[in-house]
Image (tube, rainbow, N blue to C red; front, side, top):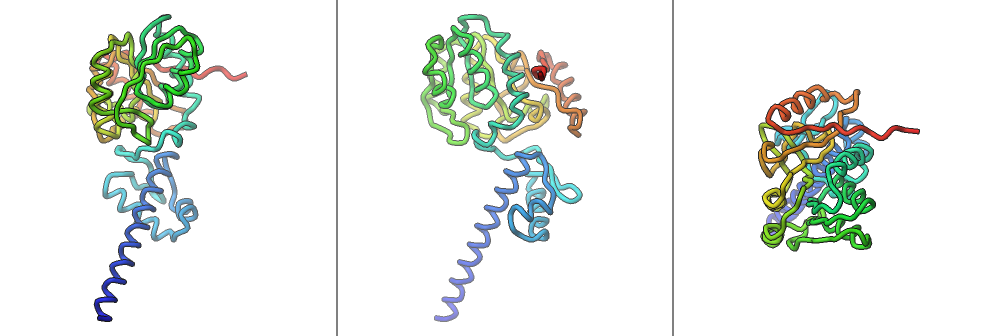
Length: 284
């Protein structure tokens, strides 16, 4: 019996080790995705583990193509990890506000505007509400909640299954509702965009709901900050040729992949998409 008991103890210890390792991997992916990069020393201190453990974790995640190993650390990979909306709100906030200002210039007074979920589309909704009058069709619970008090906003919201990470309603119910409405312009948030892989997001249901937005609009516009240019995530929404415009911002001068992003933007333009680089508001 003692031998059997020992096997149970060993199994329990192994399950615990695996659970801790998985939790550590998720925390590393979130850290690298949020900051763009990380070094071994900083991660070891943050996770309260040895540098050797972090190196093994980074190598495993690199082998899974979830990040890219560098000398002394790692940078975010193509696949990335989906951060909850509340974690993404502060990233590139000034850039997203600039993109939103450029987007609103495309919207005539009284237009019917489709808005998918996301931090940039939330900024667009706020500017539209302040300007009014406008009709907003959205599947984003957080956007709808902000729009309800505005008397000059006519709000239409889809049904569907709620995604806790993005506050979006997705699935067949949302798609059916969108098929019964027409929008003058839709602003689409994405997690990646490139000529080769198209517009992408993390969740297949979200991608299908985004396609329903595109099928019901007169003009589709992708709004995304520079960090998404040239990247691809799990679920494909559409080819880049399915959208008319892309509004983004120029990458900071110190951003190492800026040249690669500029090349990708050139390819997107060559595919027939109108590309607008939004300018930051002047500082006073």
